[in-house]
Image: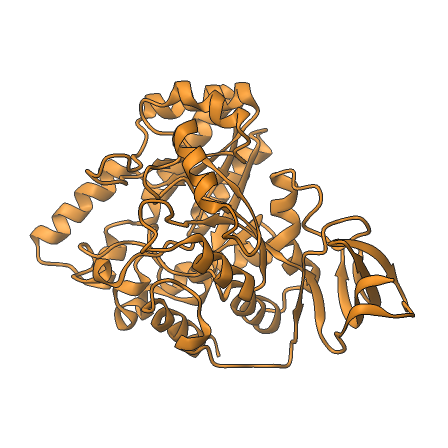
Length: 422
């Protein structure tokens, strides 16, 4: 007897889409067959729906401990689960203290205990002064390391900080020695900081001014610098939230030359354009910024051609007061945990004609492979029964009361998304 049988769905397997039944026992996929007869503790009729592997979101910020009022494990992971994410990897910021040493990791592990609705893992951080801590973090089981080639952090003790070139290079050497993946936020900080200062001095503080202060070439330059260092050190790289076709082409060129590198992008870069951000307001401020419509079209081509390895939310919440002020004063980060699967299914599969198997790779198979999550990412015998159902013919309106984020203003951002997409 199975614990669960899912019947009659269009099951997205690695080799294709098949109308088959799935039997689940003790959280594992125990059977896949044309027809599974008999009883189960629960039976789900999935007729007319896709059965997909659950999303693996490798870019999530949960701000507990230290800034739990921004987002805690209970609220953040409830939102992820409601939106079809079944596993996530949590970034080393913006909790306090940042996860840059073993003591901070222990605090986060303790804070997360019995509060998560889905499976999780943690990154360690690479910051100036913590090269000696990377070994202990790796030994403790972090899933990889994260650094910023972009100004970040604050004067608050224990907060995250961006790397200088020396730390970046030496950190890559250490990550290569440990066989650890280094994830990079790539924007040239000298250029973007000075462009920002120029804009503010001229009284230019609009949404488009903010986008213009972080032009695409500042992303490309930082990507190319990191790729050069990776070629010298042999470090495995992953670029987070890449926003431009030009940066992706630089990454592909390096991969063809032998650099071990992957790349992600995020829902908001496909759902919104810079021209729309002015109407939405600072809730849609993020780094790198939402790009202009012509640049977004080029990014869509990269996605459809398979040049982006997977999709993430970069769920980066804060309290409502931190979104006040102009586009240079407000906190940069979009709350985006709960609607990634539905928005991208609508945009990519329904509107752009992406094959459903490619979509499954983007949300699950590719990140599982990169992070060696051997029991996840695809629907197959003996793997974790991390599955979601998507009805291609249903629609709904996201309302504030449907959302589980800690900060209620996130509802306004997601409502704008759905209004635009639909």
